[in-house]
Image 1 (cartoon, rainbow over the protein chains, first blue to last red):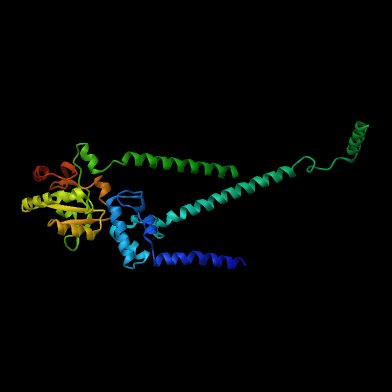
Image 2 (tube, each protein chain N blue to C red):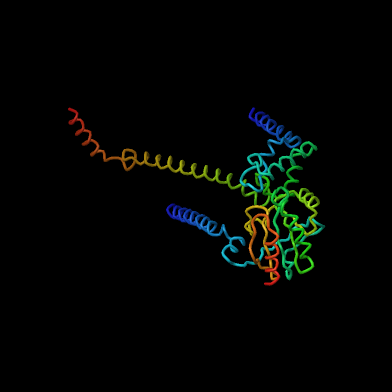
Length: 154
Length: 182
């Protein structure tokens, strides 16, 4: 059942991604392309002449039937890799993807470790109460203690 | 053992934070370090070198290869309106000075190379032009807008006045003479 759910989820995400690659829209690319003269704005957020020109270039390439990767490659050839809002998944830029992931995994690990140590220290404290540890009382002493307690109750 | 691990972890965290703080301070202190800033302080730094693809012909051009000549470095873009007014003046200066040990070099910055070529045809640009689409020259030269013009002497040092905005004919001639003289 779980496998079926995973397959359905994968298909649900893969289909729009493939459609976006083949038939990109101007709106989605505008959000993924930086404005080189007004960083850190994307061209969607900018009205600079260059941003306007880039929008018209992208619209022209979409009309010509280019895929999203082809349009991105053409922009990178003109303006360099930094024109794309998201870093590449190769070389040094891969760190930008991996470090946040490592941070989340590391943070979860630290929290898990602290929680485990905290629960373990509580268990030890409970197990270490005087009633539960130490050697049993001497029978004579125990009898005397019972007598005293009985007298106290009376 | 646990105490030792804790101490090492704390020391590592302190070192990491101190390192990041040092990096921040270094960045703040050095962010204005570019040749435009140095020229404002009255210095004559070496022109930052570059090797860029040519737009006026095939191949690449290395700024260092122009050592021995006075160079007018003009940073522009086809989408820049003031560049349109300035270009005829640059073209005129190129015709006046080209036989006298002067090179006028246009650097098309953050622009589509096709647009730049169209601009060069429309404004009859005949001086050499290179394409810096990624803007690698922006930081070292401290460019804040377009056009901007620098003057490089025969030894590769920046001389005269760095002109931000359209350069005037008189400024061109005066600074070219300075570059030839020094």
